[in-house]
Each structure stands twice: as C-alpha cells, then as structure tokens.
Amino acid sequence: MKVITMDGLRAARRTGTIQQPVSYKMNGKSHAVTKQIVNGEMDVRWFEKPLGELMTFGSIADQKAFSEKVVLDVELGREQVPLLYKEIYDEISDPNLPKLLEAKWALTGACIFAEHIEAGEVKFSTLMAEQGPIAKIKTYTGGFEYTKEMFEYNQTYDVETLNKGMGEGWNALLNHLHLGAIITATYKPENKTAVVPGEAGDERWVTFYRTLSAAVKAAATAKRPGTLLLAATSDRQDIEQALKGFTHDGTVYPPIPGITTIVYYDGYQITVGKKEYSYPGVTPGKAYLIRPKRGFKELIKRDLEIETNQGDLSRLVERQVVGYGFRGVFAAIGENIQEISFS
Image 1: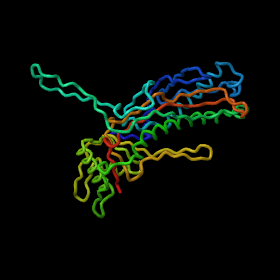
Image 2: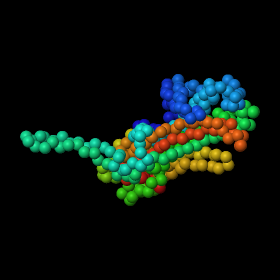
Image 3: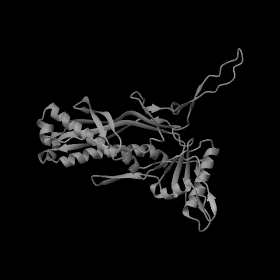
Image 4: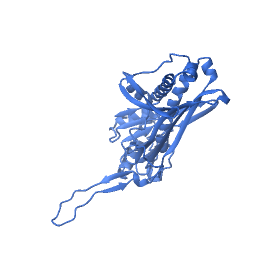
C-alpha cells in the first residue's frame, strides 16, 4: 500500500536528482534559470555583492543574478510543501486553455469491438463526458517589496525568508485548491457512508474496519470503486490497522481489498503580517474514498512565474517581486467519491 504524507514526499525528494528550467521575468523580459537538485541538495545562490549594489546601481548582469537568486529561493520554498494531490488528478498543461471550460471537456473514450457481419456497420468510438461543474481558469497572485532599509542594512536573511515564503505559499494554495474541492464539497446521501460501530468494548479500529468495509462496498455497488483514501493524520493508526486486517476476540477480520493508496492531508496555516490564514485539512473522524484520475483534472494555463521590476520611490521601495499563475480545477465529485464518517 502506498502512503503519501508531507514528510514522506520531502524524504523522497531528498534522495533524488532533478534538473529543470524555471522561467521568470525581469523588467518585462523573459529569462530562465536551471533548478538543480542532486542527491536531495538544491543548488542555491549566494549574494556576492551588497543588496543595494545589486538592485539599484548594479549592472543588468547583477540584477539578473539577484532575480535568479529570488527564483531559486522560491523553488526551495516549494520543495518544503510537497503537492499531495498528484495521485488523484490528471495534469492538463496548455497555455491555450480558455477561461471557462464546459463539463463535457473532461472526456474519456468509449470503444467496443463487435463481430462484423458482411455489409454491416462498424461501431464507431464515442467520447463520454464526466458529470461535474464548469471548470474555470483563475488568476492567483502574491508578492512582496524590497525596501531601501533592507538594502541599506544588507538584510539578506529577510530577503531569503520572503522568497521561500512565496514558494511555500504557492504550493500550499495548490494543495488547498485540489484537495479543498473534495473536503468542502456537499455530498448526496448516496455518496455518504455513516459510521458502523462495533460492539461495546471493541477496539476503535473495529469501528474503522466495519465503516471502511461498508464504504468500499457502497462505492463498488454504485460502479465507482474507490482505490484511494484521503484522510487526517490523526486517524492514521486506526485506518492502517483496519485496512491490513487483524484478529479481535477470536474473530478474524481479513484485509480490506481495493484501497491501494492513502493520502493524509491536515491543511496549512501561515501568518502574514498580523493576520493568520488557514487552509482546512481533512476533519479527524472523516475520510474520502476516491476513484482517482476519473473526472479529476488539474488545469495549468501558466504555472507560477516570478516577475521582478523597479519599485516605488515614493514609498522607498527599491524592487517589487510578484508571483502569478493561471490555474483551474475540475472535480467530478458525485461520480467518484464516497464520504466516510467514523463517528
């Protein structure tokens, strides 16, 4: 069984070797810098000159070095918040995606082969649309400003913290957009499995076992068998004990078949200035049995792009950095998810 957690994905990235270009804009012109991770260590840049010299009186080469530093710091921040939804959604990356996409756009092919009778007609394939809401491509932005004070006092640490924070915030948003669509949805009665309690004195995982078994059966009966479970970390021990089976009071509870992947998501919290922002995770005591890759589309018109430009002298801002992307989510909830309550 595959178990996906933030810590587990971070550990996996620390053993890999990755090399990919990352685009950015500086003063309205497009550039690219190579992101490189070797054996888990990411190549980062260090300032070889004071910040003020790089950004105000420096050459184009100095400004470019600063911008590349910003971009790589942002990517380092993204590495700290892995994307948990990739096992659920198909990725569609196309710069030509329109702003609105009808539900019929999420297509699967249907083809049947039949014995051909002489002079008979061939059965041609068709496209079948998953049911679900209209998908919209939306614009998401974030940014920060480098002040004269940062440059005067060469506050390199503050600059790096801002850069990494942007990367963390972007990936946290992506997790929220894709998993939040599942967590915050309203489910019909036929898409819900209520708790099936055990007998008095039973261990807690007996209730989890009976409830999960009922959910698996309900989803299969509705012809949308789920293979992935989205749950809260606090329920991990009971869920995994139930799925692998056990013996309790002389009764053998065999492993529950069908579920091959578990994703644990507890949301994300961050403080910006004096305001706290929170993305909700899976509520403890709930879970979602999902048929992945069927009616779940991650729509990427443009992934996160960093743009740097001259600041605002009237506010003593030397440089502005803005991150933006054009993203959409398509989730056919009713056709692919069983909501589970353990209490």
